Image 1: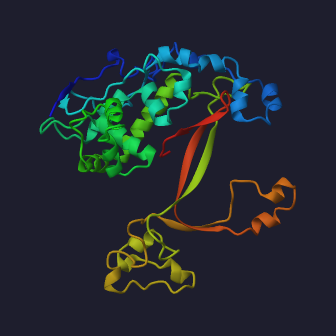
Image 2: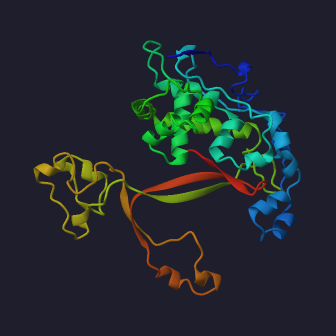
Image 3: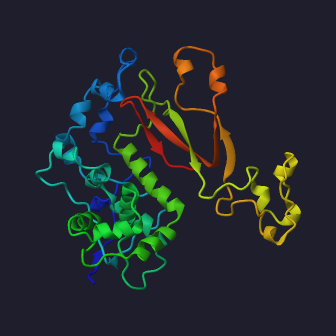
Length: 362
């Protein structure tokens, strides 16, 4: 087993961004700050074109995002969010380091990479080390794997839609394994086992994952990619950004047993009220041993799941295209759903005709 001493991180090492006088990270020499959107007249005239075509009309878009202009900026550094404990020097069995792109790499080669490989070449994720290392309780014990290596390995599996076993198979592959190990910082002869990934995921809190997402969003703001003020033509600089919501229905892991399930079903038996009986249905009296801890008709693995009848649509109907009455739309058959409602908040960017998703909760 080979170990590597991973030193303390600092802004002087270039692994993370420092804050300006206001405390917020800022990269003053980033070329993305000079991006200017279309005028109102140009936006109106190009309304019928695709977003990819409208971006080409933006001044300095092509020159700013050319590979020859991006390459000298690499790596794009990330922010360590506030209130994250520092990383102390420690010996680890792996060591993630940002690897510069190959000298012969061209823009045409980049088009053949998937998004995960491209992101690894653009960003230095060393700033995530103190965030993901919060699951370490002490400096004692055998050397662990670098938390960034483990975290990026989990993200790789999620991006590829692999299970943990498939991830290990790919890491041990004679064809692709060495490439993955090289990018993630693993030694090919000392790879983590399945339980290592399972334990790391199980002991990583959701708030730490959100800190990683905040780190990425703050960094993109520092470079001027995510706007910090309105980008609509003619708006003053002091006006805030426009926010758009994007909702998605997410199915529960469990099968629905009662469409009236709610928080009262998990109260002590003498405090419960049956919403199904109040609605005139059979319901449950919760007077048997099966209902001691909670009503026997709920889904304990998904206590927050609820039932809704979704009759809406996020696509225009034929009648709306033809300007007909909306009665046909209202009478259209809906969809039964048992689960959750996922709501994302997106920063609208009128310069690039896109939006930037932000992590929650809000």
